[in-house]
Amino acid sequence: MRVMPLLSGLSGVSLKKTEPQRRHSAHPSACYACDPLQNDAAFYEMKDSVLLGSSSESLEVAELRLQLETEKAEKRILEKALLAAGEEESKRIGQELHDNLCQQLLGISFGARVLARNLEKDDPVRGAKVHELVALLNSAVDSCRELVRGLNFSHANDLLASIRSLAAKVSLIIPCEVITSGDVAISSPEIARNAYRIALEAVSNAMKHSHATRLTISLTEADDLLTLEVLDDGVGFSEQDIRPGMGFRSMNLRTEAISGTLTIDSKNTSGVKVTCIFNKK
Image 1 (cartoon, rainbow, N blue to C red):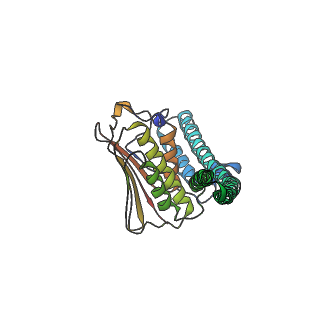
Image 2: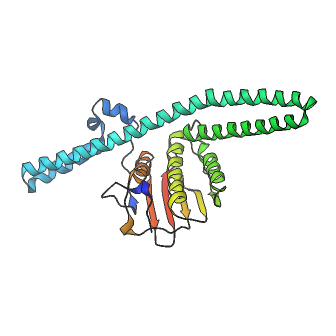
Image 3: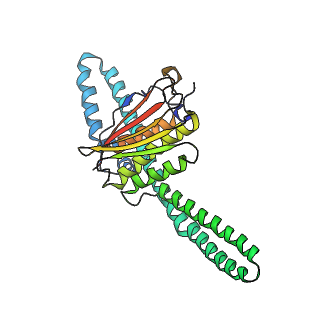
């Protein structure tokens, strides 16, 4: 039984539960530009912990520990900056698609519709063929808009709408149900965007590697906490198969970005459940 390739290449990471790091309002890339560690309260806590422990060990060992923790903190900040840069690029691409490709397709569709009406007068058969072309163009426009929605979350309510759209696409292949409970509206586009990416990653893994016959995406709310779950009935995986990689790293980073907790549970033959719990405000 196989584990998802997206979970390959990250050693020393538990798939059971990952506690997020403290969330900071400053943009990751901006922090790094002006010395990230001096702006990270978590780093100061780590530094104090290392230095206080130096009384029971040599100064050289303490310095090595501090250097190691500093490198880990720098790596974490760089990863967050890369994630933020990727989101900005996604927004740019989404805007370009909306302003250019979608508009061009709409223009072609309009012209084809006029042509079809003119042809219908003298040649109904050819007119009908052009109407079929119009339908294909309109379908392409809808696909383009869905792609834009996935790339650019401009409204907080896009989370539930995008999850339902994702489920509709998956349902063309296997049944995919969306379950909601409570007030799942989110006030922050950033939280909505990161939660959707986590759901998308989990669904992608399940679709590619779980051999599932059914998927369920649930979004429930209780006391301002949202629980996002992606459950499949596929083959699951065992601890021996765990090879965490970029997909899992991405889910972890996004969970940290929204100050949440991430859990991935699986037993052989019982499928996989990905759970992310976070505050919706």
